[in-house]
Length: 84
Length: 136
Image 1 (cartoon, rainbow over the protein chains, first blue to last red):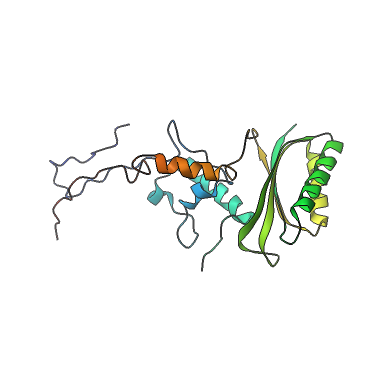
Image 2: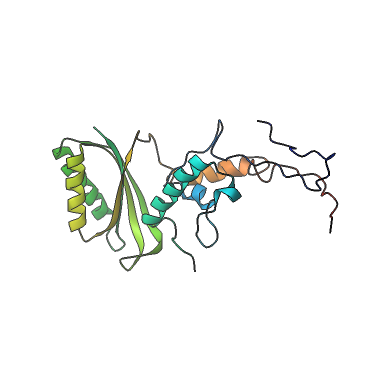
């Protein structure tokens, strides 16, 4: 995985943004589990909404699995639907 | 036989012993239906993120079930009748987890996390270097 420095400093762009990779892909990626609230908590906003994958860099496949897990955790009262 | 994870929430003013009895009763119905319970975890009285049937707290229990669908359906029917049970969820899984679930290992993982150098791998550990000059 070549991730760093897609835009090198020699180019004219003032900012280089490292391309983020999916946190659930790779050898020691955590397993998405609806019981693991601590893990899921990182992928919801302060208001309790699910963070879009373009921000959290979760792959589309894992985002679907993650959303399902968050919704299950909400149903059994482990996570809030909305924080007022 | 299909494998299920089953979580149920019991009312807060029920004693842990009563929760255990309920679990035993459920296990009984499942075994009568030809299934078995491979793991039984009691998470204790936990506070809910929101009120469920006017309760702020609930006793959580997790069961790993290996049983035919009719047995599970019968157990669910009895859970619906029981007023001490606030909510339950049965999820079909491809394989059952061995050992304690994520909820039970929380404490251990806290220690593990503090040992890890540089915090989270994709955030704190990465050095972005000096900030490039601003344009505007």
